[in-house]
Amino acid sequence: MRIWVLAVWSVMASFLGVQSNANRERDFGHGRFSVFVVAGLLMTLIFLLSVYGLVQLVMMYVH
Amino acid sequence: MSKAFTLALSLLSTPALADWQLNMNKGVTALSREIFDLHMLIFWICVVIGVAVFGVMFYSIFKFRKSKGAVAEHWHENTTVEVFWTVIPSIILIAMAVPATATLMDMYDTSEADVDIQITGYQWKWRYQYLDEDIDFFSNLSTPREEIINQSTKNSNYLLEVDNALVIPANKKVRFLVTANDVIHSWWVPHFAVKKDAIPGFINEAWVKVEEPGVYRGQCTELCGKDHGFMPVVVEVKSEADYAQWVADQKAMKLAMADEASKEFSMDELIAKGEGVYQGACAGCHQPNGQGIPGAFPAITGSSIATGAIGAHVDIIVNGKSGTAMQAFKEQLSAVDIAAVVTYQRNALGNTVGDMVQPSAIQK
Picture 1: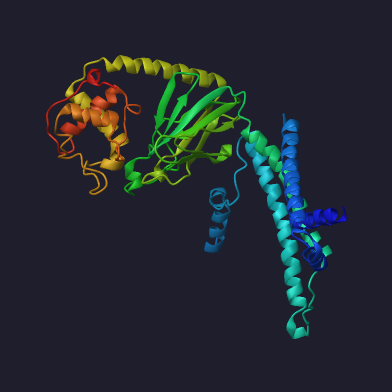
Picture 2: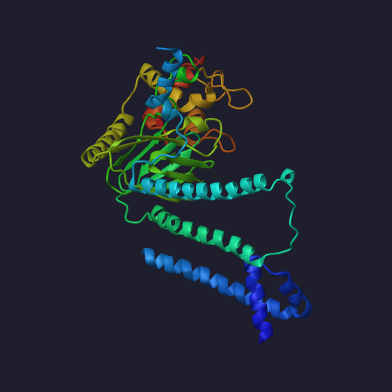
């Protein structure tokens, strides 16, 4: 479970474009590639859905 | 009074200052004022950020300069600071998007319009079609040629005047459906805050609701060829009653024109009328003296078409010639205009064919 939480945090850091060197070394030292791919795709999907939802909300509010 | 003082005074007078206006117009519609306010809001946000960022930067450069013994610090990262300088701009951007979205939604809300007008860009004129009324006309530059070639003084609306202005009613929502017939143009009236690309095969929408009657001027704002600078936009906003009268007049004029097309004209009448049509519709390419521009636009003088069979001459004007700049004029000119300009071209500009064609013989 912990490996997933750390991967999600790292993906979020990558979205922001800021990551500490310590975390980077931890991810590259012990992380599993497949976990990052899944977490990355999942977070991208969540991001897209939230942008879509936000636009829908604004449109509803305006009309 | 000293010369310098007079000069300063003249520079401060309103026309001189108006020439130096750099900011956009406030415009004459509620929407244009909304756009102006949004523009100013974003502008001041940018000014504050710019002053703050460059202030800190220049202060740091000056205060910690090498000659004062400043030594650079060497460190790799500071996650907290990095998160701050990423998150704060994101928050500013999102905050700016809130009023911008509201304004954009207003701009794109073309629903429930009272008047629908299709605007079509042509090289180099505009066509206005009132979709609910049977009104359809072209709007050509009307600045005299003498002014353009510096043979007379330029008037205050130089290159911003047309023969037929677009007429719209005040206090009504008018929807524009903007498209083009040949290349990409763009219909722009700064006081309406409307600037819409006119693209062949596409219809872009815009709308306007002007409160005060008046005349508003604009230009084509997408480089569209030789006479791009010679196809201005003039919009006449009339009170509701005046607009109704104008619509009635247009319809009466159309009936009169249909009547005229069945009339028989003398050759002198056709040539006299044809000269005006030629200068308005043909001279831009074929030149006022009919000599054309070698390599680009053929001459009318001595042309095999203008001195050949009259049927082929009428045909090229009515239907144009595909693959060339010669456009079809059947939509732009009335039967009377076409008969007149054909007769003019055959019997003027150095041609002496001696025949003529009646409007009733023009098959569109």
